[in-house]
Image 1 (tube, one colour):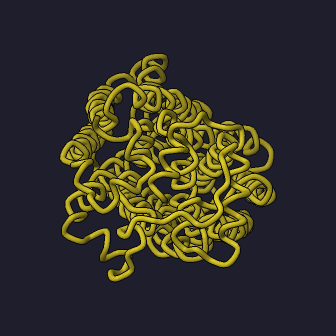
Image 2 (tube, one colour):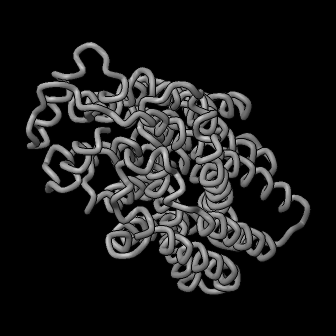
Length: 452
């Protein structure tokens, strides 16, 4: 984006139009939270119907995450070419269709394939929605806006647990997927009505009609219109390198690899907690409803954790807040299994785990757009999320195999605690000022998302 235009938006108060754009992005992340956790909350019902092992269940839990990784890494980069809003609309159609087919699955193989398809759609949505949320926020509120965007995940996961508990009583696990399919389809008109195209996409692609579209958006934001397309920094328009080569170029490589490592390890821990906790609580002696309640409380804590992180990011360096969140998450993971001896203690520690580990994910989403120039931002964010999804994919499968190999829940939670700490170390090694090609152009460069 033009530096002058970015500075003008950063210095101006947030308009209703900008907050509504962030709000639609939050709803898209609600979809992500529901979709990921719908498999965890229906795991007992699916296992009972088809009599599958823990390892097989782990594969089903990972199938949607495989799709998300593929969508983030290979679909999201097309958003830098066709537009981020257009990509979101395409992926909503894909994910809605996948959810409908999941509800009609007749065996575990069919369910795994339809979960893969659904995940591809979700993965393509997330990179674009996070970028749009960052671009439409001003400097003061960008950290909070992106954190609220991530809060949507926790809201969706919490709602998913409540919906799953209610619907499965009479309609079985298939009704939960059908509900998700309808909810996803209803987001399509919401996006058409209220989600704008990325400002940076309009400025860097400069397609026919870009100037009138830009002026309509500026007017909606209560900003002065422009007579001609603003000049864009040369690095932001650079096309000599491919987009993946660009984010791995010498001046970007360190931050890119450390970001990938942080996403991989923190998402590994996050998806272990959200995918396996309801099932492990049942195995620890709780009822199915209590197990689902434990999972809901994890995500309920996440709503407060992501919001708190966004508020802290307005006053402190986000990188430091994020590292503190990883350390606190690790301590709580180590304490969780001993706490299950008492129901109230287990639920209390679970809420705190959800608070901090959801905050870790929110922090990564808030920090990552600051690293990349507009022309490769969807690619950079998409690949970071995609690499993180690989950790998410491996997590349920590996944990399922460890449990089948007679690992105790205590050993598993301690292993995950160590992995989360390593993720925090990767984040601590980031050099926010190191992305020289992106520093001037990125919307987060002046926000609480970077070290001050």
